[in-house]
Image: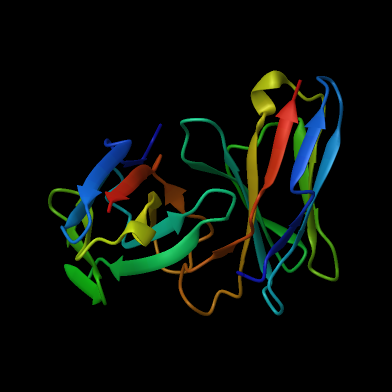
Length: 113
Length: 113
């Protein structure tokens, strides 16, 4: 049972425009959410996180929004750059410092120059 | 470079065989996680060790086992291999001091033929 879902397997965006990657979760106990970015032949790398006590967290060009009532979060990248082309994984856990993270299936972002 | 080292990077083996994947966590990290990524699948949590002891178990098959040694490196043993075990196996580590920001190695590609 996939508790974290990324329903869009791929997304293409023009350079300079906004990329919006979406993630839904089913477990209401999740209270900490993360985005990881993965390039081919590399392991996933941490990008940004958000705690359930917030609805927005921003780090440079990356902003994560959390809508707890809808069990939905999104990652916004503005402006998108060709180097952002990668697979983005959404992850969630039931508490900060929990034993494991539940990952989505990933969204492949392609930023077109 | 995440500081997590995995060997081998690539491995091809026949069905029914047994392989061992090795992971060295980041210096000082006590927790080691193993994840499996199959085609079109997200990252599936297999097992976690903390300072030598099993801490949590996920979707790990009985044919698979893991351990963490006193020097904190970990090994994932996969036996009676089947074609469906072909996947990218990631090791990750965390010291547990920065929430759930775990750091992934580059993965070990296992192909079962």
